[in-house]
Image 1: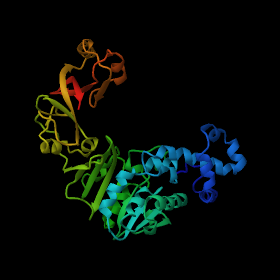
Image 2: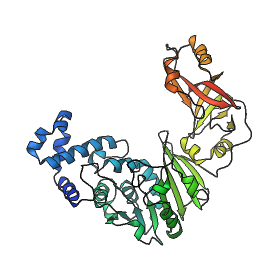
Image 3: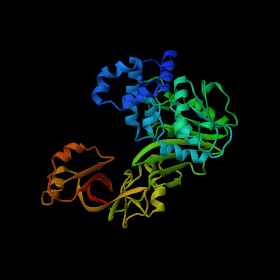
Image 4: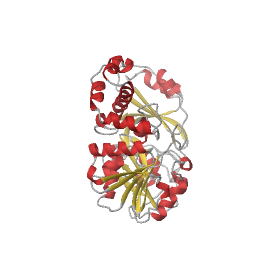
Length: 398
C-alpha cells in the first residue's frame, strides 16, 4: 500500500523516520488542525513555526482524517493514508466480523494495513498483525492504541506468503490494487493472489478472507467448503467475507444488514420459474441479498414473489416485516416509454422524483429533466421487467 501522507515512498527509511518524527511532535498536527483552510493551502505561516516536511505531512494527514470520519470512529486521531483508508474495513463491519473470533487463540491479521480489523479483533483476543510495509505496521500499532486493546496486539513486518499458518485462525485482507493504481475485481490480481488464498483455506484452522463484494469471488469460492457472507451497511454492499474452516457456518451464503442486524442464510438457487402479477407492494432486496444470490430464500421466508424470471424486484400483498427489503407502495403500472410517464404526472406533478432501474437501460437524469415539477408528494419510478415486459412502476417509498 502506498503512503498518502507524503510523496515519499512508504518503503523508504526516510519516510518511516518522518512519520515517527510527526508522531512525536503532536504540536504540528494541533497547529494544522487549528489553522484556516487558506493557511493549510499556502502553509507559509505554518512553515515559519515547523519544518516544511513535517507541515506537508501533517496537512496531508489532516485532509485524510477529515474524509475518514464516515468509516471509522476517532478518525481525527488516527494514522491514515489515502489508500489505507480506501481499503480499510468500515469499523461497524470490523466489529461484526470480530465477534466470530472471540477468545480464539493463535489469531493473526494478515495484510493488516492501517489496522482497523486488528483493533476490532484485539478487543476480545490477542492478535498478531502482519504487513510487508513497515509504515503500515507502525500506523496499525498507533491506531490500535486508539481503537483497540494495544496490550493484545503484536505487530510484525513480514511477507505473509512465506510463513506457515497451519493451526492458526486467520483474518486476511489482500491488497485489492495489487500492482495497479486502482482496485481490481479480479482475485487473480490481488496481492497475495488467489492461489495463496486457496492455500490458506487448506492449512489454517479457520478464519475469514476479505474480498470486494463486486469481485469475481463466485468463480473461485462458490464450490469450496466456505460460507460467503455479504454485508451491507446504510444501503450499500460493503464487503464479501469468505468464512472457512472452524469459523464457517453450515449454509454456503449469508446476507447481513448491519444497519438493523438482520441476517439471512441460504444456498444459492436458480431463479424461480414461477412469477406472479405485481401486487400492492414492489420490494427491492437488500444489496447483500442480491449479491449473495439468495433472493429465493428471502422470498420463501417472507411471502414474497418474483415479478419476472430475471428481475430482482419482488412483490407482496402486504408490507413485508423485514429490513432485508425496501418496500414501495404501488400506485400505477405503466409502459416504460417516457410519454406514458409524462402523461401520468402532468395532472399531478411531484416536487421530487426518485428513479430506479436495475435491468433496463435508462438514462435516469434525462428522464428526470423531462418530468413536470409541482407541489405533489415525492414519487418513485421503478423501471423494471414485469412478466417479461418493460414497465415503469409508479410507487411511493414507505
